Length: 272
Image 1 (cartoon, rainbow, N blue to C red):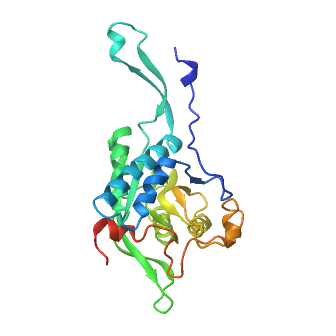
Image 2: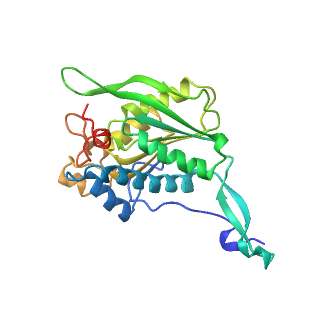
């Protein structure tokens, strides 16, 4: 007999209020917020940077799987079953037959994708789990320095995405150019149709959210922090998304403010 308290699961993460739409999830998590503030601080360097990125993505990955992945009934006998036949845990858990792909976008997304990949293999049937690798960089206008898109350098990608959940863990959601390029490729160049596309970020800007949802409105966006630090005081006093067209988180070179600097560079101690 299933305890009525666990017959269903309605888990949703706690989020800050906003008007960006139902596909955007900006977590209200004071522990992660504090750790991300430490990661963003000027004096924080390796090895603390790597430790914090790993911890934050472990937390974010747990939330995404709990909130977005299919659920199923589970029944697990405990150690007490040798004394009592009623000692069976019954309730709703993650469906282990779910198929998923995590996509590591080098350089900043390499470690986050590995963290997600490890959790997927723990919770799902590993035969249905895959990790792909993309190597791309911002494409900029030579005169203005403005981001114009993303340049692909190389990729190691499986052939199909049919009925899979795609996860794109990339720390900084700035302009959306890399994510949009990756989503377009996976939707149009591979076999099958993905079941769901989820992006996972430490920080996003209003510009990123607008650009990604404009090109891929079915994308689900998760982030630990929204940065719109270049907005006017009047806009900052309103609920995010209220004056979306006036909200700014990117400087003239498309770097996030307040942001965390170049996370790919900081993670790898390589400023190239």
